[in-house]
Image (cartoon, rainbow, N blue to C red; front, side):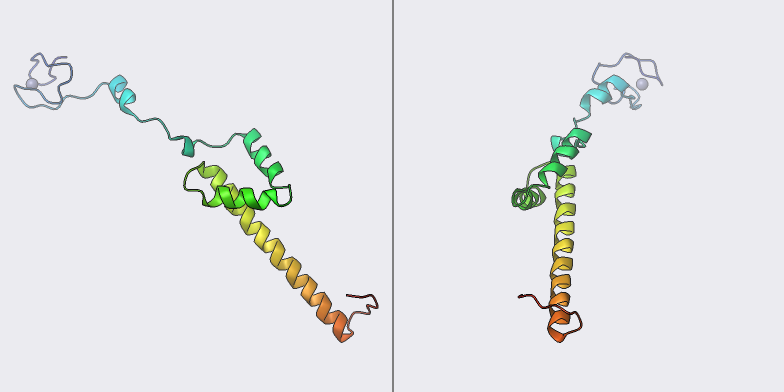
Length: 120
Ligand SMILES: [Zn+2]
């Protein structure tokens, strides 16, 4: 390497020129080698992995266990964590609507607004 300012010869790993102090621009290859690889947790899920996760969410009982584990485990893929949390939110919403709907039906049937003669 040669200094761009004073043209003196520099060491291969020099950051500044020893004679004039001019900063040495790093070569792109050296910069690329220093860049850390993306952690496994930040790698996006593939379409096949998303399909697998959504199919697992269709299995009763197992889905709730997997959602809780994936949503709150300290380690794990960030995309999978987001999918698990979204699944838990939807699960809670569906459960709330089911309870609300059943309660409303029972109240209306009890008060006679809905003619219902079966046993509850
Ligand atoms: Zn120099």
